[in-house]
Amino acid sequence: KAGVTQTPRYLIKTRGQQVTLSCSPISGHRSVSWYQQTPGQGLQFLFEYFSETQRNKGNFPGRFSGRQFSNSRSEMNVSTLELGDSALYLCASTYGTGGHEQYFGPGTRLTVT
Amino acid sequence: TQLLEQSPQFLSIQEGENLTVYCNSSSVFSSLQWYRQEPGEGPVLLVTVVTGGEVKKLKRLTFQFGDARKDSSLHITAAQPGDTGLYLCAGNLSGNTGKLIFGQGTTLQVKP
Image 1 (cartoon, rainbow over the protein chains, first blue to last red):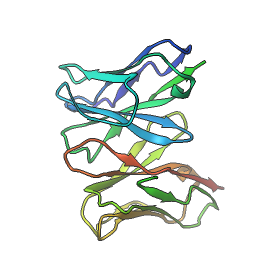
Image 2 (image 1 turned 180 degrees about the horizontal axis):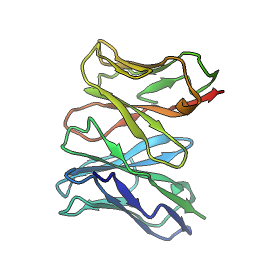
Image 3 (image 1 turned 90 degrees about the vertical axis):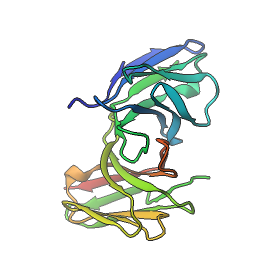
């Protein structure tokens, strides 16, 4: 069974631009969670989607948004990029809603200049 | 304030030594997971513990969930250079959410 895939793997953007990251969960998994990883803050929860509905949201500004499609694929969008948004963005998928076993993708490394 | 305190943050040991990593909180978790992450990659799930007092073994790795489900430990016996990496504990406060709270991580270096 294929793992979680994320595209693109690397991205360089300029301040003020917007970016869209994509995540395809493991086949059959319906829940997708997104995390931001930085050296200073570690891994922080962004949001979780299940059956196309956002179930939870972390403490991030409204510039961070996401959505999930009927095939469980998910996208996250960051508008008006800031230097501090430079990070590794990780998505994780789970079969159900319990979140006990989350399987992570390789991440998208976003650099904002 | 970090909800999950992980210690130590850095550990550099010789091959063959034993080590323990701790993950502590004042909150009760419905489950706790341990992950290992290599540079430039996503975390890889090692184990999930759900029941207070539960002990799970994965080859030379032993994981324990505290009786009160507020803390956990990871013990590695006879560490090998291949064990080098970032170890992360992550807790789930509620069984109905996919939101994981992560510890700061322990960077382990095992020297040959």
